[in-house]
Image (cartoon, rainbow, N blue to C red; front, side):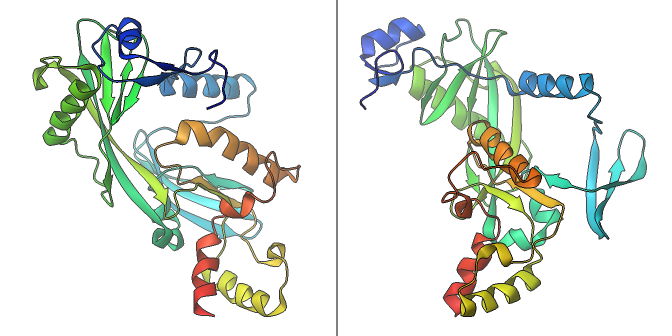
Amino acid sequence: LGLHATYIESSSEKKLDIVSGYNINKPALFFSHAGWINPENLARNYLDHGFKSNNLQLYVNTKVSKIISSGSSWKIECHSQQQNKLLNKTYQDVIICSGSDVRELLPQYGKCTVPIRGQVDEVEIEHSLSYPICSDGYVIPTSNNSLLVGASFETGIASEIVKQNDSFENLIKLDNIIGKTGLDESSIKQSRCSIRLSSLDRMPMVGAVADETSYAEAYLQLLKRSDNLKSLPLQKGLYINTAHGSHGLVTIPLSSEILARQITGEISPVSIKLLPYLDPQRFIRKLLRKEV
């Protein structure tokens, strides 16, 4: 790969067995200085930073049902399960960062995105791993002598119900990755199912939201004039950062920086040639070009 062995090296089966403590029985690439993130702790650290600066209000167990344009601002209608009452909030700028719920809040993006169901199982094991291992699936060590194994991948399925068959398949993945463990479903401590959201081209969707009808009409006129995309109408103050699929922890930080700079009018952290591939309206434009 042309990279220094400090960062990545091709490892023999014997060395992997020593590093992992298990009979991996296949060659692999070893990232000796890589790490892995606990998403819950990462989220807590971000929240703590926001609380300390008094710039954050957190509403948990609160489902947003509608986002309504109200002049130069946006009205958020939501229901608090904790307080068991409806809440109405108004903001100048709104960023929707959820996964498959985007399809419900902004139906115009339902045609260019797809939900992907994934289930992860936490398995209790006598000897944990020293490093995560990725193969056909992944195995990640936790701090409490167990392993996270996953994840299933069901395209077009939005159900969050835990399936026993998925747990069984995850145990098979575990054996295929680290060798026969002899573990059965009684070793599973807990299971969790979540819904990823992916775009049709597998790239994230980051940027301002458009009204589909008015945007389409303006784009058809633009094609006749060979004008700039910047002249197309967008809904001021409404943005999305979504469709990160299975790679959210990798793509979300940079996508968030891109969006923050768009909102504040700062210089993009990436090449302007990349931005059209992230633009949420790219699928509308593609469809219209086929029709012209």
